[in-house]
Image (cartoon, rainbow, N blue to C red; front, side, top):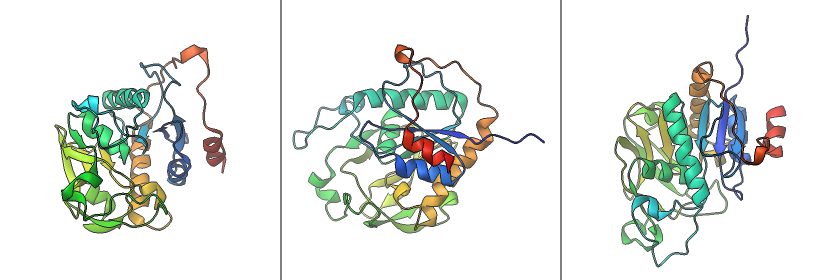
Length: 259
């Protein structure tokens, strides 16, 4: 009998993103996490992977959704990462691979599909009565969300539960072809999915909640399960690297995968 390999899940991140919680959650669910940073591969992304998690991080550049920087906020963006993740989404769509967006990942997916963002939630009167940003502790449950019918509801097995919240931006207008199926108490969109359920995304940080919340564990179990189903369909492609260097896997990720 031939044993199937573990599915490889790319985690896209910025250079200062703490990827350990994402990697640990993926590894615990049975996947092999590989952190991918801007500049490690060229824009053609000739990579072999079975699924992708778009992690949290800096803001999506507002030019991607037709806006200038809000003058009331300090710009904090990562354009090389924006380009990397747009390319990852395109590649995943071509290969029909599952994608899970988290926090910034949800926002970037929405922008990829033509949606727009609120750049300054704290400065928006509509959202001031809900706590959307508590940096520490990162597992603090800040507010409840309501889950409507859809794939996320089937995965989460809940119609309402509390989530953590570590963001100052959020979805303003929903991208074409996406459904908003998780909503915060103030009406902010907290969960989206493509019509076929291939792409899912949440605004909170489930990687920080896997030790205490079944809904968080379910999200990572689902992305790994979907990636495993597609792993045998993933074609091996020649890796194209900048400078001829070998693709680097974070030492932290390597240690986690060896546990």
